[in-house]
Figure 1: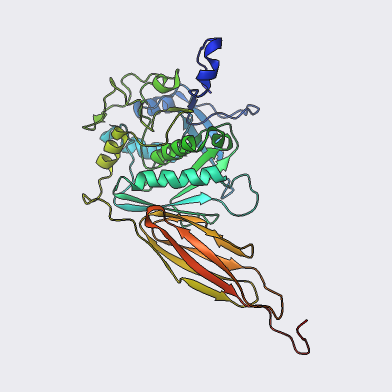
Figure 2 (figure 1 turned 90 degrees about the vertical axis):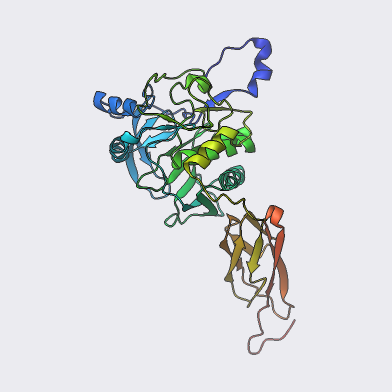
Length: 391
């Protein structure tokens, strides 16, 4: 957390505006990591990075269990040695100001499938309820710009078919991500567990910010992080070949409302600034036609089960984000939310009662402005076995 001098009388008012970097460092015993050599420092400086706090760390993937050595820069950006080589190869294009992007971008048009890491049960890597809601809002932030990138969202634990996977890790607040490679977004986003303590809008801000890194956005104040953090390296002329995007501020007039500033505070609203929107629509232009009216439909609209446990897949056709709820303890749904067209599963527990009428429940899909759709669920009781009689 950044330290700012304040008077004693101003402490209470100050609390709402405390400044945090993208990734707050957890209080853990120091681990000796390899030192970064001068050549590597020079290479990152050439690419326009603040190397004042660069570290070489082991990234332990909580989903796959694999480990990877990465450079950590500006507190929340992970870059592998392989990606550094790719960025140096592409450096001739120069980092474009924003607000600012890396030399690596995502191929467009593209549909980017986002997975919020979550399932029923207890697991420290699962997103909590605030994080799940905030991730939905972050995905909506991007889709509302009608970019050449379309984002879908689901929740689950099978990460193999997804482009971006968002997990929870221990920490006081903030997140980490990386930059695109090979035309694809960076896959692994980490959100620190303490971030939820700052409220839904701040978590939405951090989620949107880290996804911004995944698609190639740099910090708006990359050249001088003290602008948003109160302290930090000043890159001066670093970022050779920076090309200013028309319609966004230059380095002499930084957009202080940008969601891509290096540090955040407790009063963030989680929304893109006008200049953020200009930058993204310039980098990833989409259709010139505005999005159509919100739509939502489901199929089938009723499902029935025998007395044993079972499941059915429900197909959702939509151009909005949606959530799924049920009204009975014997019904469960997975995932419990999504974005645009997709699917979810309705599962039922065994119904071992005999001589009872079928039990009934409902599953509701809420698409916000697109309205709601209801699916009727019924399950028959267990039939009598030979020799059994109704009680």
